[in-house]
Amino acid sequence: MSILHPKARKAAIAFIFVTAVLDILSMGVIMPVLPSLIEEFAGSSASAGIWNGAFVAMWAAMQFLASPVIGSLSDRYGRRPVILISCAGLALDWMLMALAPNLWWLAVGRILGGLTSSSFTAIYAYMADITAPENRARAYGLIGAAFSGGFVLGPVVGGFLGEIGPRAPFWFAAVLSGVAFLYGLFILPESLPVEKRMAFSWRRANPIGAMSLLLRHVELTGLAAVNFLLYFSHHVFSAIFVLYAMHRYGWGPREVGLLLAGVGVIDMVMQGTVVGPVTKRLGDRNTMLVGFVGGTIGMAMMGWAPNGVWFALAMLPNALWGLAMPTMQALMTRQVGDDEQGQLQGANNSVASIAGIASPLFFGWVYAMSAGSNAWLPHPGTAFFMAAVVLAAAGLLGWRVGVKAERAEAATRAP
Image (tube, rainbow, N blue to C red; front, side):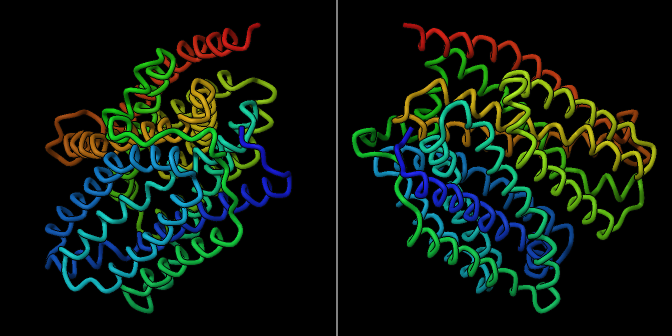
């Protein structure tokens, strides 16, 4: 762990939290207007759907390629310069998209956005630097709460600004990223001492090379598989939630927006305030299992829910899912040294990006086969049932691998 003065550590944690909020807020702000801007250029809703899907895959692909590079660069040159450059690059990206005259400019913006958003690799590594291993689950919970807060506020602010003009949210997002850059420039201390840095190597900085770190440790390999399953099931929301709610419950944008805001608030509370006390009482592995059990029950309830009220109630057990990610991250960070935290987070982001490419395609296909009068599958909620099965498998694997990870950690501490 990096040795920072307590005041400097508090300032650093505050910066990381604020930066995460601003970055996610800037992404959430454009959510209500980007599809309409794509449709404006594409000329029809059907064409816009194809382009929007391509943009999502493009963004995830850039994350897959860039995250290991960002992580390795932060291991070599420190977290601070990487985070600051990423913030500045994201501000330029939003400006580019605000000025975009056609779809190809928007495509370039999505590529640049995928590259610069990979700064979260360095953000997670930064938190590992300044936080004791036993407190990392709570620290990652704070980052998760920042994500949730940004996603709650972003679409609301973006919808309001969208009434002014379809490009206004992009300019606002650019300002937010610029503020994050300036805030970090004057406040953020470096977290990785020079003596703990690792030489940059393209062998480690490419996605396959970065993920080789996961293969060198049996425990990391298993936890990476759990990470993939978690993200794979999570993307059922981005793939079909809006379409499913409209088809089955007759919901409109208002109902969908209110539910998403409510989910974000619950998740923010769960990761920001609940993770810490629960992990102190139950430990990381048990807390992770509770999260997966709650998520499995919630997903199954969503697939079964006969009306919108039951679907909304399913969000309560599903909220426990927020306990799984930070505790799994904490278990993984304790398996590697300080000089490999950046590479680890880069590898994790690459795994998540693969899930982000594959999962929406899979669940979109399942939903297409289960909705409508000519459905091949028997129930419109089949995709949610499948996501519940994936989460249950993740929980079983996580429990088994978590036992081995804790034993390996105990062995390394033994005299």
